[in-house]
Length: 137
Image (cartoon, rainbow, N blue to C red; front, side, top):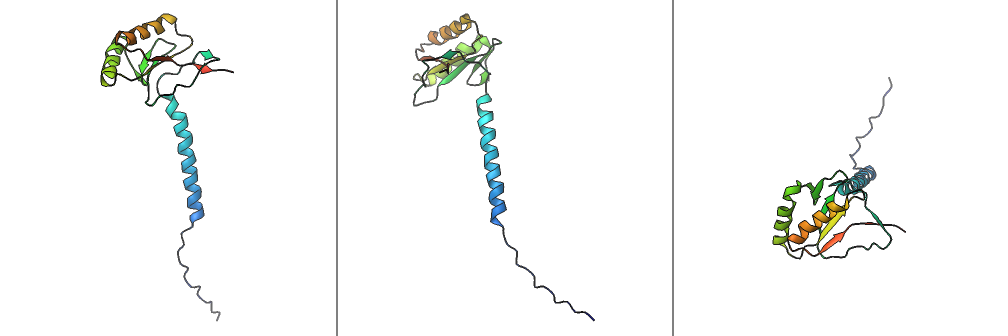
C-alpha cells in the first residue's frame, strides 16, 4: 500500500505587487479621464489665433462667458438664455466686485455678438474683461 505524506497547509500571503499594479492602473485611468473630461465642460470653441497672447495671472478664478459658433451663450459652463445673461452677471458682480470676466468666443462668432456681451458686462460696471485667444508661434 502506498502512503503519501500530507503537505502541510500553507499560510495565506498577501501579494503586494499585483495590488500595486492595480492601484497604478486606477491612478493612471482617473488622471487620463479627468484631463479629458474637465476641459469639455461648457461649449466647444475654436479660439482665435494670436501671436502676442499672454497667460492671465490672477489670484482668483475668473468667470468665463463662452460664445459658441451656433450663437449659444454659457456662463461658467452653464447654458444661459440670452435675456438672463445680464441678471446672472449682475448677481456674480454683486457677490464679488473684483471678479474678472473672460470672453471665450469662437472664431466664427459674429463680432456684434461679442460686442453685445461686452456691453452687458460693462452695463453692470465690469471693466475687468479679458478675451481668450490661442497662442500661435
